[in-house]
Length: 497
Image (tube, rainbow, N blue to C red; front, side, top):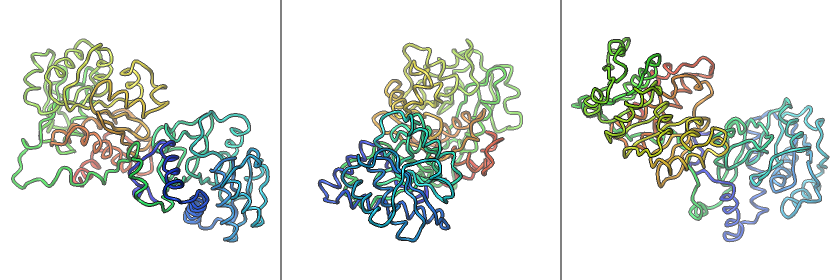
């Protein structure tokens, strides 16, 4: 199943286990039936993605994930594939449905053998059925060595449910993890597949609900949600023919200290390309005459004091604070004036670093903060490593601490609002890891707020717009993508929502 057709709900491992329990104990769908359906679904993906594959190896661990793998192997044998099964651990420890699946496999004429590196030679596809979603320890020793062999093999890898060694909840590698080309997820999509290390380790994600009834999902709501740009079609509506610029908001970008004017310019131009009616940039007095150079539609203003900034703020409907702001006394004055004004704002870059230094900082209602992991760590009086260890926990802490909408940037950008759940954007690419991309995102979000969207919707839609534009700008050639390359794509995409 392509990403565009994936369900929106994302689950933690414990929630999927609960869905399994309800299906088996209350809906009376046997575990053996679910395992058989999982094996069939996985083989269907394998055949669809690699239609010419004739020789496969299924690498099995010692739990129910292994049981799914045994089913894949047996069904592949029935389709006259050349099948090998390589086992890690002691098969005598198998219990229940997994044990029965292995017995059915041997009855079909396939005899598993202990895993060694030779198991992977000369095969078209490797199936990873080592660990499932229940892994709660660091992968070490022979298990880690075996996964390293899988990753070094020439054949592509299909992972069952989640790549072995990847934490299904956080998306972090637990010592060592399979680097799959494709992953087929059963019953519920795992939230860790879409953020942190998840996207790189999972590859293309496919989904199969194993034909459980829709009523099952009403019993256990998702823990998070997957956002796509297509979900936001129609949120801005069609512009009336008699519209004028005043109807679409006046954005004031505050930033661009000496040497960093380009950041404010990028945010302003992104806001223009995303439909804001008027854009002003307040920067250092020395910049006043050059702010709009090359982009005359941006109104440039010099502001050295709070009193000089105040009338600019009064004319604006929403503020973007932080692009190129710096951390000087001037920057602190500008941030204080913006916070005191009480207008909705998007706070980014050094605006966040200055916020982190404040002991008591209240943000205006309907505000958005957009930290990367380093900034998030400072805002939480922690560090980026702890933020990246569990991005879902980090964004929940940020929302709780600052009582505003938060965008936690990175691989699988997260968005969350007070009293809401996290949303994950699966688009974007490593080519966007370059200077100015965050400034463009700030401009996108603030433009949507200026046009009337609530902060949460503007943040979620803005993240998806920005990520999709980044993918289009890269066009498969990620290195060398510039933040300004997104502008023409933003203009096209904004007219689709």
